[in-house]
Amino acid sequence: MWRRRFSAGCARAPKGKKWDAIVIGGGHNGLTAAAYLARGGLSVTVLERRHVIGGAAVTEELIPGFKFSRCSYLQSLLRPSIIRELELAKHGLRLLKRNPSSFTPCLDGRYLLLGPNKELNHSEISKFSKQDADAYPRYEEQLEKFCRFMDPLLDSPPPESLHGISSFNDRLRNKMHKSAFWARCFRQAVSLGQRDMVDFVDLLLSPASKVLNNWFKSNVLKATLATDAVIGATVSVHTPGSGYVLLHHVMGETDSDRGIWSYVEGGMGSVSVAIANAAKEAGAHIITSAEVSQVLVEDSSMVKGVLLADGTEMHSSIILSNATPYRTFMELVPSNVLPDDFLHAIKYTDYSSGTTKINIAVDKLPHFESCKLSPSGAGPQHVGTIHIGAESMEEIHSACQEAANGLPSQRPIIEMTIPSVLDKTISPPGKHVINLFIQYTPYKPLDGSWLDPTYRESFAQRCFKLIDEYAPGFSSSIIGYDMLTPRDLEREIGLTGGNIFHGAMGLDSLFLMRPAKGWSNYRTPLQGLYLCGSGAHPGGGVMGAPGRNAAHEVLQDVKKQLK
Image (cartoon, rainbow, N blue to C red):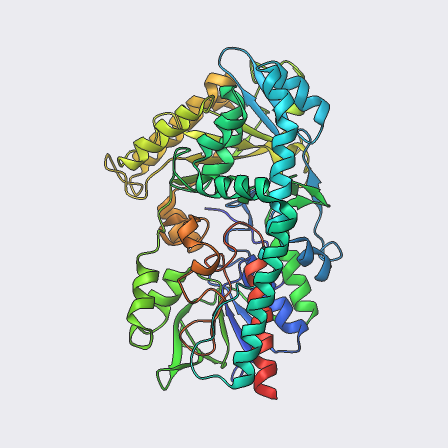
């Protein structure tokens, strides 16, 4: 397939050089870690397997003239501290706020628009339920309150216990750090108040359906909000703990506006390029088409470098892996150097995925029959996320159950976005780029194979025909498309099982439990090896927090060694 590269001017590595740190994987977290390490004075190189940096936050021109955010497609979760500290605006990051942010067309001729405008929200929700319209501001206020409570947890490593031999001073500092951490959490909990704290715990533990049923009556409103609870996960709205995923996807912000998702000018690869530019300015070296095949180990206890697929050895006593935990520990690290209980935990982490991404080039915007706001061009219904196929939570649940039984959903849940409405740099004039984020599709369907071109085409047409029900003629506007099933996401991007979060975001896989109990502070049982990707705390999404936090821990360890 014809492609154009979007990189940050990556080069080959100097031969024979020993680096202070090597980062495996040029996804946004690996690049973030490299930027902070280089700013901390270390010589750093990033090794990216593909021809283009970015990992899942990547822009690729798969059809001439059309630039696709091939995997991730919206920005909100990138930590404000990273945007500020790395001066990403100076390095080319341009965020395009969406207003309205959500559009749900209905087959009965109605529609729901939502966004940052409170008057619009009240007017739109009132079409379905006046009671829900009155409740919605309180719902948003509560989620914002919980997000503020979570903020400090995202930007710091978990208070993990020390491993191995350590000095008395190190043990004392660790004990004081943990005490301070839990004291801070306790103060925050007290300031939140008992009632809100109980509601917060209820949100974490409950199914999203329970949370939303407690707040609202309207099926369309609940279904629209519920998609945030299942996005990227093989779970139903009735799955306990899906309430946390709902919260995770409203934690972000754009230019200090909480919960606002934005497009990125030039596609999501522009996020990675901006971070890479900051890393290179600090002295980091970035290499593409450099696949790591093995982590080299010395004395069965510490890293000494990496072996590339072409046979090249690169040496460093510090390795940070932006690969998934499974890829890192089950495939790159020799199995005889890691504890059995640790390997067992990594092996049996849930890496399942129900996600397929289709990137489409079209010659005209879809015209939704239920919405006549702009009959001749782009309107508010085209700006935000367009929810297709989910007018009730039961429809989401049914789609999930089909995938749990090994079959792609008959009526898939589709999130459609059209970034070219706001971003004029990614498509030819008069034409548009459309992203479809689709659920649910099993990794290995029982009724066929994703390796079969006919089977793949059949599923793609199923999705297009579903959109036709809401926007007649959509299928005929398609110039071409690119589809990534869970198997493709694993093969192309390196996401084990196709899981976009590097592993499930259930409550048993977060905070002190991520990636494995006892190893949540980015360090690993192998001395000098750190995890800096989404498989580490605080988890998935284009956040950058794992990369930033891991780099700070590395710099802290280096500082100790120099004393």
